[in-house]
Amino acid sequence: MKKIIVSEIPLEGLQYELSESVNQKDIEFKSPIIGFVKIFKTNSQVIIEGVIKSTLELNCSRCLNDYQFTTNSVINTVFHPASVLTKDDNYELHTGELDTEFYKNDEIDLIEFLIQEIRLNIPMKPLCKDDCKGLCPNCGVDLNSETCDCNKEAQVSIFNLNIR
Image (cartoon, rainbow, N blue to C red; front, side, top):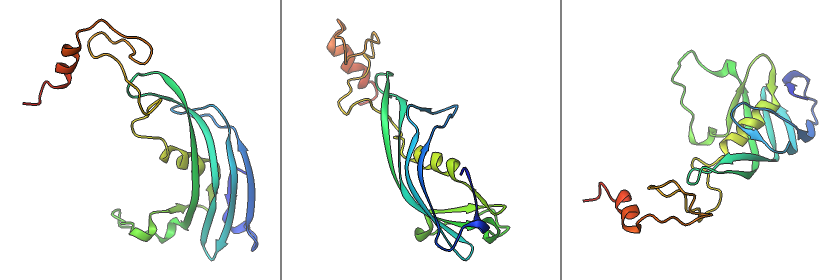
């Protein structure tokens, strides 16, 4: 099921109920990728629609603690054969093509595509909770679980160093 052979997709399409355990070097998956996808072919285009979710372990950008984050992705992507690309390296996607991918050699690596979709849903600045207090800039204490004895004015002045 990992590789979809485009020429073998039947007229009625394919449907997969997913529960795929994956290992990545830079992302720690705490649960399998679960969901449902439909795959249709129209001429040389392949349309993949569905929903997937998984739980990841991320590192909070404020307090540096690990926490679990659940991704939910709605997929609606059109794959075109890579041969439609011109030799021009500066191919520009237009607004209507933002959910466009390309496939080569008559195959699509479904799991790799789903991992890419999950990566797109990881926050740029992961937070364990919206009101995470982070670390004291003076002594490094996790302000979510402890209070420190640092001078509060010193903490504020560290954040205001260049605001004059």
